Image 1 (cartoon, rainbow, N blue to C red):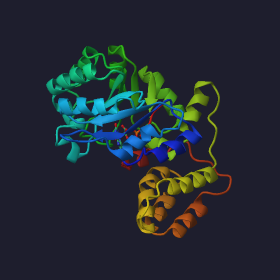
Image 2: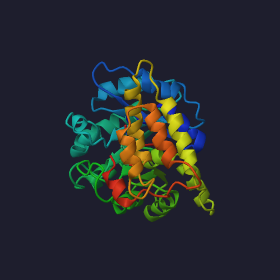
Image 3: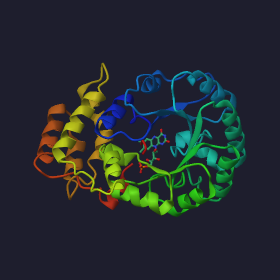
Length: 324
Ligand SMILES: Cc1cc2nc3c(=O)[nH]c(=O)nc-3n(C[C@H](O)[C@H](O)[C@H](O)COP(=O)(O)O)c2cc1C
């Protein structure tokens, strides 16, 4: 996830419960683009013990092939092509989710990338751009170009993060494709992850925001798969996680106020459903200093209470990474 799954963040997740693999933030591919050193670090210094895929976003075949060449030798598990980003500034350039409007372009891109990628080639996509009219054709292209794995966020680009995830269509992709399909979208608890995987027949579940809120979720999923109850997480552990996260995202020269604001991006996910009426999130959005931040955390995240299994359904929809 862009600006979220940094090396420091992946380390925090891995210490609590590592997913089976990680995916980098996307490398933006354009004429003369070079590998972003900050993202590259998450590959070269990856000490999580888990494989990492490098994600690319772009549409220029020569530039994508050049960047794939540049990534050679860096020990990635494979290359993941982003066909889902819904940010207007991205899709207007006909990259990310914008490409889902043009199956012919996707056809050429997948064919060339398949030839250029010596390792695993995976795709992250949505159901379509404004509707699902090209979904079946896009699945056909994934099969034609022997993509090794696809992750499907069960929404269109126009849906952004709103509305119901269409797990039924992901189930259709599972039935149609011979490669592993990972289901993605609004999975926020271990029990739900296992249920959604069963419902769709998917090979696995990719979890983004739910893992930011609950970095213990991958271990909890393993418990549920083994037939046990997921381990509850005390809110005091969430308090520790937030403090570690604050340290992890520190950048030299950043003011205290900007540092606190940078943490709020994560707190918007972590705070969902922490208390019944959303007071933690309301208060934490107001803080400007580290001292104020710790005061709010200590007020809400102490004692024997445990992290609720799921944020309330309304909070998932109104909120604005990673995988299992
Ligand atoms: C802040 C943010 C950044 C994201 N960045 C990326 C990205 O760089 N690449 C990508 O494939 N998906 C990205 N996504 C989408 C997620 O991977 C995922 O598909 C989406 O959030 C739905 O899954 P979730 O409900 O488990 O979060 C991003 C999502 C968010 C909220």
